[in-house]
Amino acid sequence: MKYAAGVDVGGTNIECGILDELGNVLIKRKYPTKPERGVDAILESIAVTLEQLSEEAGIAAHDIEVIGLGIPGLVDPEAGISLRAVNLNWNQVPVGAKLRAITGKPVFIDNDVRMYVYGEAVAGAGRGHDYVYGITIGTGLAAAFVQRGEIHRGHNFMAGEIGHVPVDHATFACGCGRIGCLETIVSATGIAKQAQTRIEQGEASLLSEWFPDVKDIRSSDVSRACLAGDDLSRDVLEQTGRVLGRALAWVVPTLSPDVIVIGGGGALAGELIFAPMREELNHRLLQDYRNHFAIKSAELSDDAGIIGSALWALHQHNQG
Figure 1 (cartoon, rainbow, N blue to C red):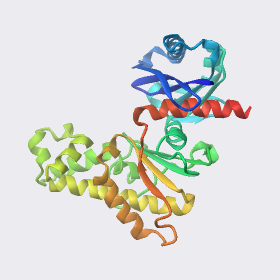
Figure 2 (figure 1 turned 30 degrees about the horizontal axis):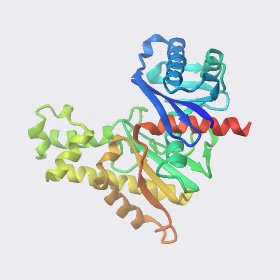
Figure 3 (figure 1 turned 45 degrees about the vertical axis):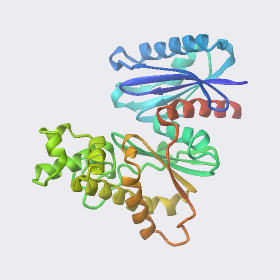
């Protein structure tokens, strides 16, 4: 049996796990990132944690063949370099070489969302499908495309990303500095912002009763209010789904996926977003595309990152 280590590095937390070659998580641990420690201390802590986990799982260190890391921001996976990770304050960091020097093992890195989508593609909701387009609706909107077990990165390693495409009627400022990006609507942040703005403009909502300070509203609260019969919340989630459906109407003809997997905290609204998304998408697609792909919720939850990182590292290592 082959084993691999998977690591999901975030600005807030790091999750490390030991997996077998089938993607089964044998043991895992999450702990605070503390970016202020600096890159060397963070990588040293990852190495120590993986050593501890292998001991606790009863797996000899030499039986762990590779280490895979998912890192936020812009990554050069071929060179093993974190080009820019704002939340970590990493710029041009040779993560692969540094961690390999500490552990003595082959290290493969990639963007955290690509690792999440790869995990879902090969071991989660996308398994059994050849062309998997995956989306995470979180603080922002990120996406990736896996084609027959290979990540399609494109030029500059950014293929499939739709979070910053412009959409009509989006008037919120985006973190990228522009106005009108898709993720200002279709994200957990965007869902909350839509509700907050409409309440501030005088619309009635259960949310204003629950939250005297509308800035405290989160996307999960919008879903909860919708289920309690709140018209404003229902309309916000419906509009979010329709905007995503319009964006996917460009993705489907371009990439022709046979499954679209949607995960992230914002996706927990489920059919409240998915139903209007499907309706809008089917309305806009050429009939030849309709009913030729599935739309599924992600299955692996928070483990998708470590599963994808570990299995991708094994895949890369086996290719030599």
